[in-house]
Image 1 (spheres, rainbow over the protein chains, first blue to last red):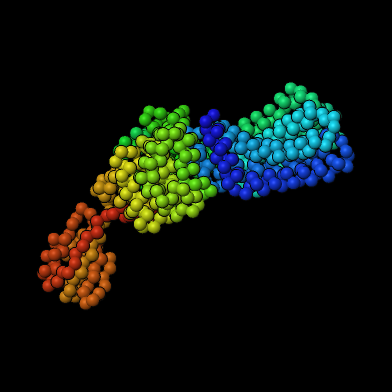
Image 2 (cartoon, helix red, strand yellow):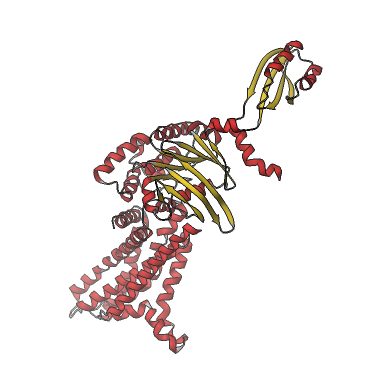
Length: 237
Length: 314
């Protein structure tokens, strides 16, 4: 656990000592803010659905950008060799990196709470439960995409390639339940269950079902496990 | 103590290291010498747990690298080839980060920091970012990271590559100091560097160990020729030609006239020293000998002979 913390703080410092974190947070806030406020006063409804609809789309491009450097850069710089010869478990290394990326994503998400405060000032009959579960769903989707991005970053030493692989996998998870009409009926149940959006919309409706939580937990676990396996393959190259 | 047992490492079809054996004892500074691609770095990477052996094993103080990777890594300080560092970090932060991973924290870290700053001469750069430091300092920073936990074993892969002569001397002195209390294994393809720093040399060629011993042992075991430079005055061509007939063990490699003297490059088998006969011949021929210097086999000739044998045969 101590090593996870050490890696985590190193990554956070690395994000905030470079323009990376600031660029991400500013653009993330501006885009989400624009799309939320554009329709908020027009629809005149006391909910945050427009924000909850746009954030998963923004995630698609922003999270792979945040995660692309996590491991690919270490491989490219050669520091992966140093890390691998320290008494440090691959799992601790991966977990620290993943948590740092997730923290940055959650920081961006936390900034959008400013819209919630706007809502509390101007809105009436606010469904606080739906807002809470909406944010919970976005946080969990952020965790899934961060885990995918961490994995994508581990399979190459080129950050651009990691970004493209990340977007590709994230898009698959995002589009799965939108492509159901193209798959055989017998597979629709499975495909729908694998889709991030399906679980996200369940949670956003205000229902916290253990199936959804297990899904998010499993996908995060799966991709972090795969990342560790990829790192272990270096030993046998 | 490190024991390498029948260690082999293959990359797909390429056999980088072929069943090598050696043992290193505490307090030794050992040079691991080989041409580029000979298998030096691969061996070191297996010894530090970065790569797994295809066959064989590495034992460090009775622990083996396959089952006790982290326990061994705790005892080793490793400076990889090209010394990769996080350029954006401050030197202090990098040392603190390495210390944290190695469980050197709090008061122990402060003591360790003071030690490595002193040993590696980092006082002037400790609050600078790594990318602002010169190559020599970066090398010292890499060494400081490898030594922050005061390991008993230091493995240094090409520690002086790319440094200027002054920096090389500094790093060499540092390694020599460290070698008084630690086991230091350093790889290099710079022969003079190895010769000046270490007290035992292992030469690896095409993944196999071709020589292992002290500098003196390698010299005495080497069956090569000794070269001799002879500078004489009053030497006529005929008497020079007669020299090799009179002393058959000598062969004439080159002869040139320089500043009115004859400069002869000669060669003889190491165990047939002809200098006494040569001197008598010079007196008989009325030569005035102004220089007679033998150049006994050096590490370079040993290295070239051992690592070029195959290509010469081929």
